Image 1: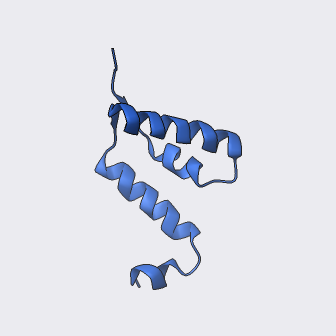
Image 2: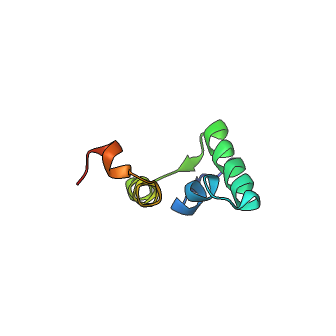
Image 3: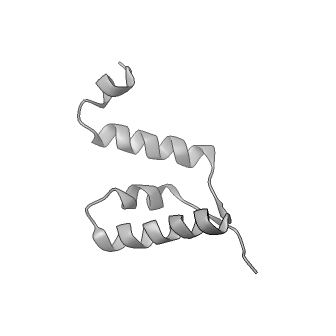
Length: 67
């Protein structure tokens, strides 16, 4: 039985972090969700992730056109 599970914002953030252990675990969970088609994600998670990436990326305002 493949139960579905929710993918939290932190999983996506950890895949891009310097913490290799958390990043590897997060990547495996995301890969499993994609391969088994049983992972769930909300619009809020996408928005939170994009907000974190935007804040941590130099010159992100130039990339997005946001002022």
